[in-house]
Image 1 (cartoon, rainbow, N blue to C red):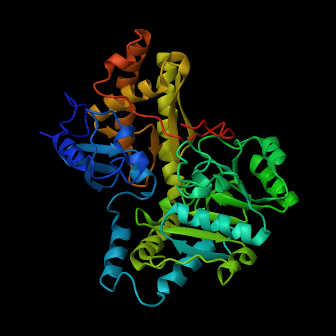
Image 2 (cartoon, rainbow, N blue to C red):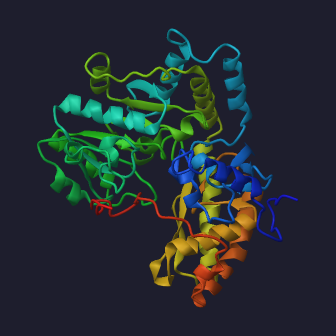
Image 3 (cartoon, rainbow, N blue to C red):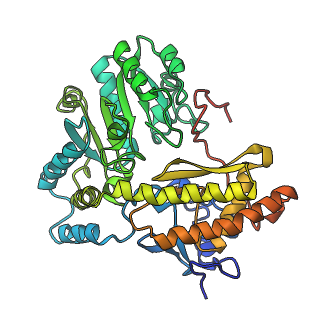
Length: 444
């Protein structure tokens, strides 16, 4: 009998997941198309590896085990799996066609909708992935300024300019590496000191989990203005989630260009580049940014339905309220138990559970919590990516699970046996950082 969303008596059986994993060995590099979805981010031997279906905020793996999902497709599912209004829009458009030989009316209609809800969106372009539009934004900034260097803060995708500063930069020319630099979030002086006459743009995630301090974003805006630098917001996570108009609305600060994906189409592949008309117009002729599937109609139909739902049902406010209960509930349990080496932090729509090195290996502690949550019917990777379909019952179950799991963590930490308590290999680190990102990693 597959496990359900309850306090199951044992860990889930994952035989079919493991069989698919074996078939992928030697066939799919790294096994996965998305690093954050891959087997290295879950406790091997316990966690499922392949999901088969989802409904609302729940998913079922290929072995039939059910889980509350706090990953939500690593961000895109702002409304939830198989959300009726979006699915209806997709099916309706599917009956008419997917990709056409000329432009489709949805390209105009969705652009008008985006312009109406996103501050500063004077012009709009589409593509398919987040790194498509961040890279287009960087190219536009270079064309507009006549400069070359890029200063970044956060994660912006797999393209050369962005990944040059990570430890996975093999295959990227040294000339490209020499033009890519990073700075730390909330370090305005570090940014100012890095600006020179060849910096074309500053691109950053307006926030990840850490809040801007002392008007940091407004000071970034001023520093870019003073230096003649294009300011780009990577709003993959903040757009249509932190507020309907994203971080620009939430923090009342305007970027020159802003990039969106994830939450805007509830799982359909769509990314959006917006911004100042004088910069965006370079895409008319001077800057080449075209793609066959940019105007694909199913994703645009999904985006229209999603944005309308987000707007009409005040979804950002609803998911923040739900996420706040989890954040405050988790931290209340932590306080009761005296386990001050873990906390839940971030903005309520998307929070992270952290573990302090003073208690041991953060990865091992995270792995133990993940392992025990999976037994209790919760798919968790250290985050609470909230969606509109999460229910009061889901939140109550999650907090009840934490109330049972955190004492297990405390006992293992006290006995210095966290690693021994794992039933499989610990989760692996990734190169992404959320702080102190201004140091290039050592060559592997």
